[in-house]
Length: 426
Ligand code: HSE
Image 1: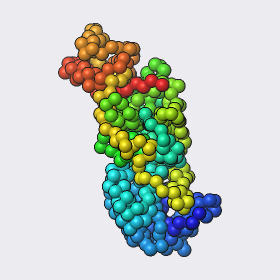
Image 2: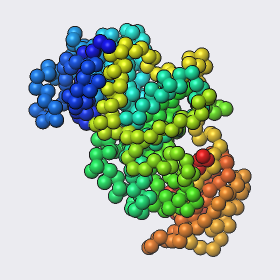
Image 3: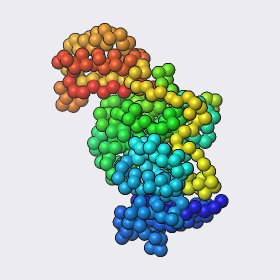
Image 4: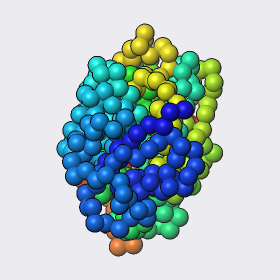
């Protein structure tokens, strides 16, 4: 192995974790030598003494420095300095290792072109699910498989919030504040709770599994802000758990990608992943089902993924930026709309508490050809003028269900905004 000369831009949680791994003197220390660093605040006190390492104020200058073979981008952000520096490195023919999911999901195709033109390697294991080597498993371990679906819990913040709401009955906003204090959330937590962070990661996994390039715009995104303790409690009563599920699947109509709160049977492998953990479930032929779980964020796990990419480069490994399973290029996958695929659904309505309301709802649902699987009215919440009605459906097109709900919204029966979540089987 020839050690590679690296320049690290970004010395926050992940960059600091990487410096600590190098200082610990394990295999990584023999695989890399540090040529330069760049961060926002030169004066900041760090766990590892970097005073002897050449300092760069400009990440582009670091990315193109003659004694840098691999530019390690740990700054974050889809645009701005991170993008400029990664582009400069690739143009200069230098390998790039990045943990930047937003950059790769939103500009991955253009960056892959740049890498191809200059023959540079672009690696991004750390961008998805922190310490879980999901990209390696898909791109290398399953290189000759046909992937049917990739699903996962890809945002630790949302998983922590849903787990805590379920455990304590506390409301979303209150638990979000805890997650921020614990340091799980992104600098802008709307990226987490809106599903966008999980969407970035899903688009990247789907690129390797199916499509060859990330299509973040094609991910149907729905966050967790509308989920209430009553939903978690009722799901549990029905034998399910609610998770923010990121899922890309091969369907008759093409590849679907979605991130949305979803009911999973209590014995589903993802249903048992609690707190800030991540999980990735891959269904592929001929391997069958693989379940990977672990820590999806934090200094150690994310630095572990960056280090794995650096070790690969030191060993001279060469891989495509996104494409994985061998049939990908020969069989380009069309994308399809996730909502067009029939599913079972959970619906929570808040309705007026008066005679005839249940009859009106069941009549309406029947007129739309939707068959009800279970139906229950929860007791009115303290001080509320409405009652929650929860129903689950047999498989139906979501558009039909939404049309029925829209009709109900035109009456004085419906109070508040309904919540619709898909219900998955094992
Ligand atoms: N905010 C992310 C999460 C961190 O909660 O999973 C890692 O991408």
